[in-house]
Image: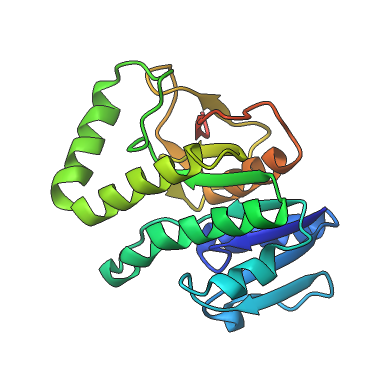
Length: 210
């Protein structure tokens, strides 16, 4: 498949790109800093920022699916462009007829199928209080994806670690039994699986190592 990746220069994004190339996919990465990406004959890079609608469209046209790892990091200055950037991605996909979108999120993006979980609720409340800009960005990104009318899946992450890849991950709804840690390698592998799967179409699984 031909896959377009946004957020591919972060720790999880780089693992996703590596795994996708290893499995024989053609990857187009849209990146502000292309030098962070590896060189590979099946990898092409479109340099740009998230306000560059034309560049985003160039990266998306002709692809079979888009994977967005866009989400707030530790740099507060990076937060504001994420909402508009996600909107630009969705607009380009709709314009060029690319239907499959796999995006990352957190439990701050609530889901109708979630149940009560005091640990997750506390974590979300802390983020909302102490990182309100990041919280708002995540919620807005989730809303944009859900309202996109695309074939979307939102994969919600807990705490990410540098642990190893395991045979399987625990994909569940908030409130079901499971852990709160996920290796970036497992995260990348699960995202890659969703590109060609419809198991979680229009759903938002919460995944962990256990």
